Amino acid sequence: MTINEITLETERLKLRPWRDSDLEPFAALNADPEVMRYFPKVLDRTESDAMATRIRNLMAERGWGLWAVEVKQGAPFIGFVGLNAVPEILPFAPGTEIGWRLAEVHWGKGYATEAARSVLQCAFERLALSEVVSFTAELNTPSMAVMKRLGMRHTTNFEHPAVDEGHVLRPHVLYELKSEF
Image (cartoon, rainbow, N blue to C red; front, side):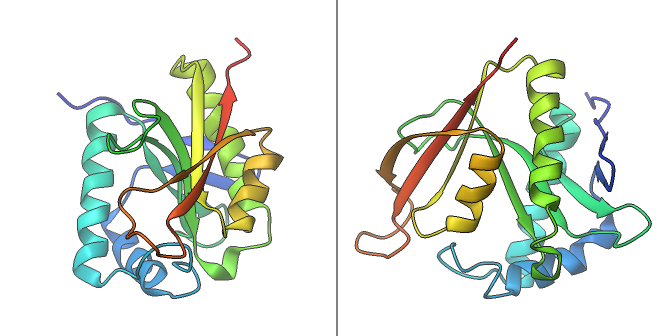
């Protein structure tokens, strides 16, 4: 059964289901070493397309997920912002995480925070979630700054089990935000 997919809008952005035309710019963003600096590796086109397929399938199944983000009257695809199930291998699973990945040319414009605020409103008001978490490598101060701007609270540090022991990106932080409803 396909559920109606949710579309969100902010003053400057539209968060929408994915299109085939998003695959090429998504692959470019995933191949950019600067964008992927806080991930263990860049993704090649096959890996990027497989990730997009997983994202699209989950959105079609649930109606929500990691939305494609476009700038109104501007760029048709700048990355994604949205919700995903916390991977089972993490010590705080189960749960729902909020995350983002935007092309570098769109950094520093407040897009991640603006889109994430809309996603959090949807999570708490429309999806009736009681809590949303976010996590990243301890070195990823830009993402932690977004988490703080969203009102999220640092709760713990942990070693990410999917990152090799001794790797500089293995130490992670966990932030959370509880619903006020």
